[in-house]
Image (cartoon, rainbow, N blue to C red; front, side, top):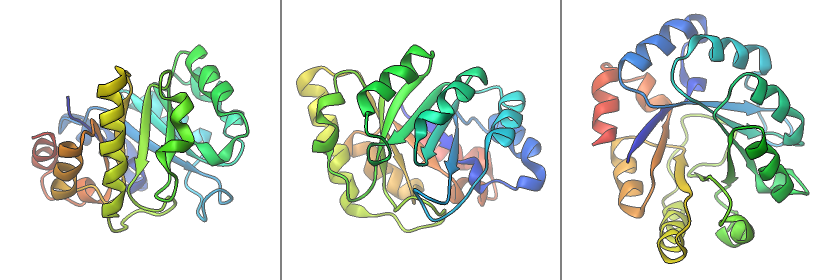
Length: 214
């Protein structure tokens, strides 16, 4: 089932509560929150006080994408806020399996994010236990980038492995996702579609969400 995840990094932070309520009314399924530390990626987004405010305001599930070094440091705080999904980058930790288990034991779904240059083979040993895989279809750190077509091959690979092995993970895509690229990724096997600029800059948010779900 196709789910649309508006990326709140593209919202108007002076009207964050308003945008959350309006996007929920438009039919969004899950909100996507990008946490950047200026180290793992060359940008800083927002920290726990903003995540806490979002968790109090939003009534749909929250998906946190940790674009940080030492992602382990955030797990307890995210669990305490009732976050539903947490993904981290395979390059950001020396112990990905342990971190995956810790996230799951904290009551959250665990995901691993793959940068455009990171092959599926790097997470092969985790596929039987992981809840979702986040395929970055742009280089992480900035919004509004152009979709990288070659990343779709990883979606196809993961979809084929899921069917062959009976794995239960979902496939999430993030970066340059609009109506056209969402359709490409859906045909390749993606389930969860993160979209920032496309949704928040649309004149009719409800129509934009509806079209992406189709």
